[in-house]
Length: 193
Image (cartoon, rainbow, N blue to C red; front, side, top):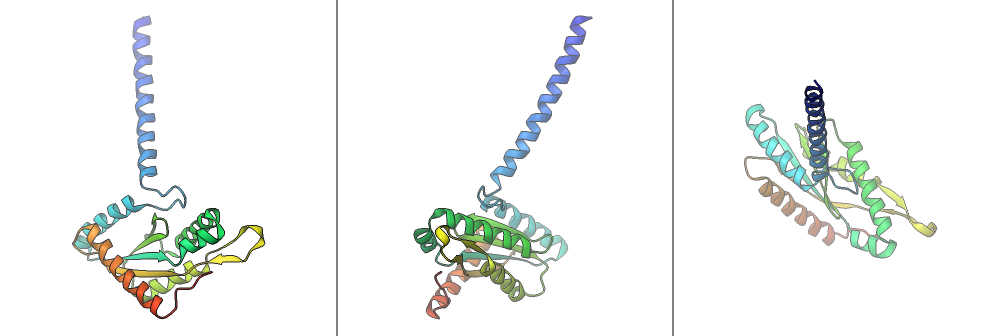
């Protein structure tokens, strides 16, 4: 009888351990898809989202767009105000992006000063672009030693999520972003703060 009870206890312990392993695997998958500084989804999650949207677009005739975002003069912010201020600004930008999106749309922090937003079923990419720019320009942090508030602006590129690889969609949006950056630089619109 004692052996049977031990077998049942071992089976219960094994079931508990398997459940805990499944929980830890889920947590690890979340960590792998999340930027640790901002809490936004990362580049790996973006590739997965683009693949998912491409398969849904075929079935549901939904148009989706990738907005690729590069903060202006971010290196200068880090150099002049320190990495803590730069990190605080990245967090502020991430929060502003999260708060300006509709349910179902998604913001990503890809690396350093690069962000992305994916929207589905929007009426006007220009209206979304303006909303993103306004959100980023409203992000601000106070520097240390009572220096002025730091703000930033951004360059932005957009591409439609179509039947091509996620990297191709990203590359197309990045090309438009580089064109926007060059235009804004030529017009003196990329300001320093």
